[in-house]
Length: 400
Image 1: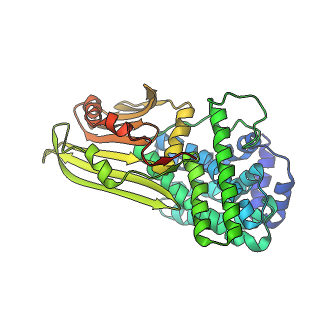
Image 2 (image 1 turned 90 degrees about the horizontal axis):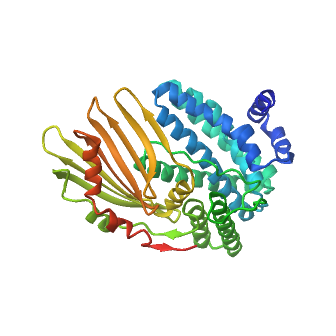
Image 3 (image 1 turned 30 degrees about the vertical axis):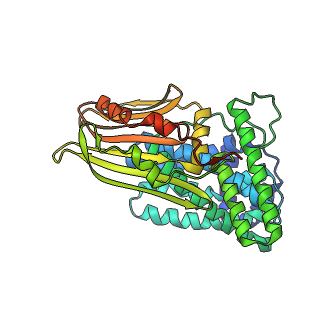
């Protein structure tokens, strides 16, 4: 990696984007090259700022992993939308558009160390990033300049929805995961080297082909001029990105309620809520309950149906998820057990922790609170009807 070249590119895209975008578009590149020489380096800046500000290594790692994954998924969306706005599909150019537009936000990420001012700096950087994307789409995706505004607007909507869904899914399951080995293809949707269809690489290839099919649906809808059809097609694009191509109707609140018992760990339920939220054809359902003895013992149960975003958990299952951290007073670890993702945290000083498990690559069950040991939290999770919930993993799923 040429550090001087990297700094020159960052300076040019931020200071003279109108002249730099055509240069970027003309450069030969591959997905691995873009990650290795640019994305992986700059995406580490906000994670470093978060680490300095919070001293949370777990949170910093999570933020870094999400930045790498979200960049990739947004690029798939940009590529799928290209024909809709008169552009040309090209997955590498789409990744260029997204990665270089994110430059402002990544560089400004160090501002996280500033408690109040940092928020304004990051907001300004985000707005400038939208402007960078607007300038870059005509060069990278070959869309007419007059359509760049609409192309940018739809992409930003997709980014917002994606960010909300990713945030709900990741924070409802575990503190940190590691998603590796996913960027080894020369280009998305066309992998030149042999691979096993059941391997991480093979499943990623199949996933990207579903994205391509969703993009064609979007292109067809655009030709009809039917706004409703176009909206559904955009939902299909987002569904393909998050759900691996499957259409998923998340469980309704009434179906989640039976998995939230009246008592948990010997404590009575004191509050309950359940809801299903959706946008752009995507849905996520959550049920929350608190349990208390009216004195010092309190537990919180969270049951989440990732719905359309279950594809994120499938990807996590393909990857090598394994992390462990120990302190003087406890630990934090993520691992796979009997084919299921598991996350547990424990603080022996405060006698608090959490234990969560992912079922059927779709549902998350997590219990947090104070207890004599983490085994009590594990027992509380085990007392939920896990088998019954996992049996619903195909409920509302229409295969893409």
